[in-house]
Image (cartoon, rainbow, N blue to C red; front, top):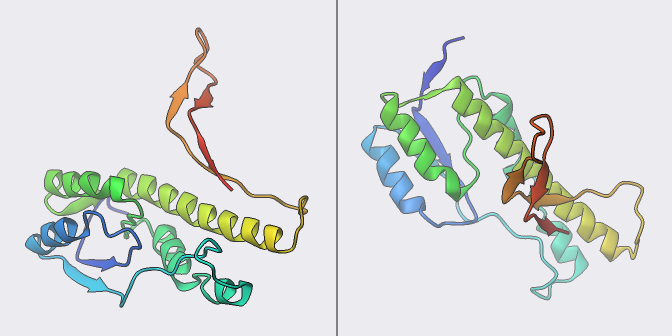
Length: 167
């Protein structure tokens, strides 16, 4: 397998539209074919006042499946799931003549799996609360790591600091 692989087509399907227009323009200028879905990913939330049946109907199945499929094929597919990675993608393309390195695709695939796991954790937590189950057999958590701290004199371990837990 080659380390570099060209980006020829981009599927743009995001719920957070921040920076999307600039990203799309930059990709288009590089000759990347743009494909987009018809709307934003639906969000599972009781806070909007939706009933349980509506929330279940709005659980996104296709989006996470596409993300997982793309990440699985990271040998030839670059998966970007966070707005924070748009600039890194554009830099990678600029530095490699419109291609992405395998190491970059691997790192983005790992982030994609983390993103879909966080989504699944949110759905699972919602179901447990809907069922008034304070102690489900399995409980999933998702967190955003703000920084990693290594204890003095210990290079073999570290602790996360400043995490936001999403339940």
